[in-house]
Image 1 (cartoon, rainbow, N blue to C red):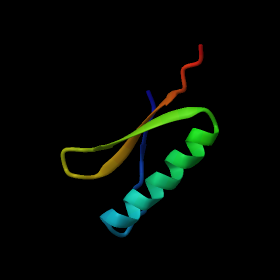
Image 2 (cartoon, rainbow, N blue to C red):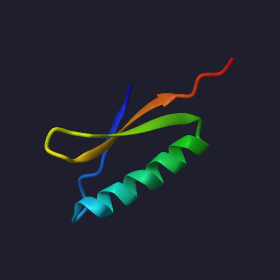
Image 3 (cartoon, rainbow, N blue to C red):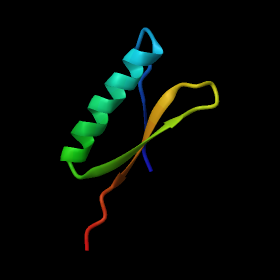
Length: 53
């Protein structure tokens, strides 16, 4: 499962917004994302291919 982080953000809120945009783009491309926080509080996404039946 790929992990997507955002290192270029000057602050936490900017990172959260940037990752939300990434999640939207990945969703349109057929990926499912969940938002998480690392132990240090840094936000990240876990992405997985969307399941189809």
